Length: 114
Image (spheres, rainbow, N blue to C red):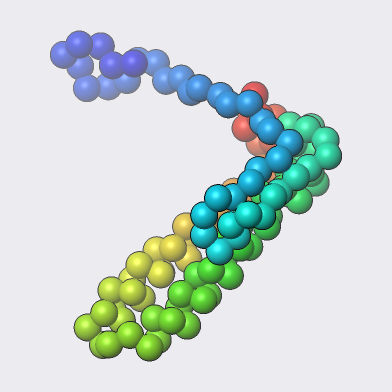
């Protein structure tokens, strides 16, 4: 919350969402694929990892495919494609690092699940 006439926040809050036991993708290269876990990801890091790692790795595989396709683009488009794919690769790495952190640190898992 920022008070009227001020530029600094005096309060920060987030809104949580309910975990579901199943995630179904509707678009992209993993379309129609379901990701499930048998126990609550709030309590079991291995279940959270099993549920989300296919998304992170699927994104990595998709980027690999796009890089292969970009190699065949005309020179004037290839530079832009390489830049966008570099940014996508960095985002994918942040997702992988975040998942590893949350599933490898009990306090990070507790905070992210509350």
